[in-house]
Image (cartoon, rainbow, N blue to C red; front, side, top):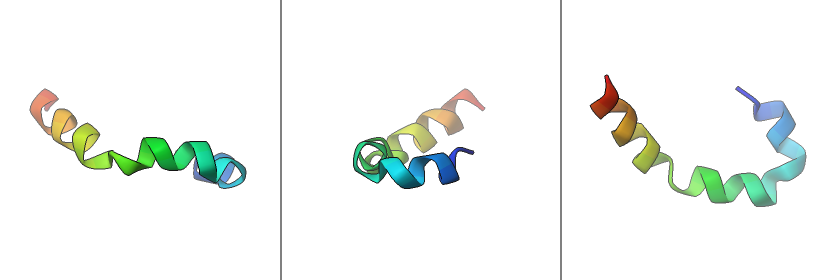
Length: 31
């Protein structure tokens, strides 16, 4: 959970957060 560290890097971090559904779906399949 690097939310505080991502604060200063919102620009680059947003790209990773833009596709959270893909990671969430993959995580569910792994479970």
